[in-house]
Picture 1 (cartoon, rainbow, N blue to C red):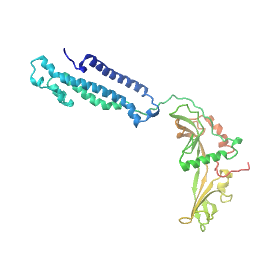
Picture 2: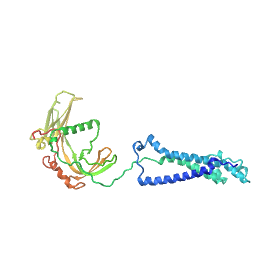
Picture 3: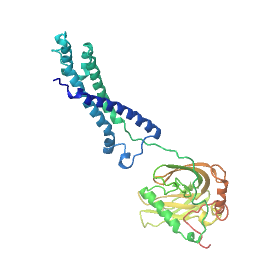
Picture 4: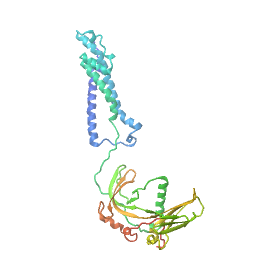
Length: 373
């Protein structure tokens, strides 16, 4: 009774060939839809590009290629074993091509050349296919990768939830809002918590109705307020014996005295009403520049002082907002408010009490307030 090795039986090698051909077709179909849909969305831990989970989702193609490589290597070794007996059965075969021939003792990478010299084409083809599967196996790990894909949704209209204006409601007549903002600014300086939402590098925009998406970037045109304090260095400093100090700013003299109650002393003062300081005191105290001074006794007694003036600018801007964090990431100025560059001129009407009465385009210094009105 004739005996045929298991890998050479039709019920084995025919399904193997069909599966390999089907796998190639499946890869082409998957590649087509991957390009069409820009890949498949991943969630959770599968979104990482490194680590254990990256190994998990890149392993299936490697496992499949290992299976095919193993089955084909088994088929190839049985073909190499039977080839000498096939020549012997044909008759008139020399010993070196039949009884003395053993392809199984030759290395897989060179046996195909020996078989080609002997014109054993089935052995040659089988060995070459095994070598090719060896090269494909490590490449299978690159079939599945994680990439950042950015989708651009169609243009849509979103609504501002507020507009540039001075809120004169009774709820804002005290300093609660100011103290909250000042506390946040102090925390940012101390702990680096970053800007709050809708604020970026001094620019503040009105809240925008953002789409309910967990990740992405919104590009929008809106209006913004830029806080721009301008600081002026002193012209001269007279230490006056290290306890009584005076500094001059464009002819305006500021004096302050210190007592040795601590090694480092500092403070903030308004500019006094005087003729020589009229250039700075021509406006109400809450809009005037303020003086920041510092004094230390170590290593020697010395003082430093600067004057800062508050200021605001109203602009039409183009912004980018990160939906994952809600943070304002980019602000590009398109023009001054009402220039009709990116935002309707109608937006400027809401800023009437900022550019006109009572602010007249001025900014509060945030340190001193007129409490009589």
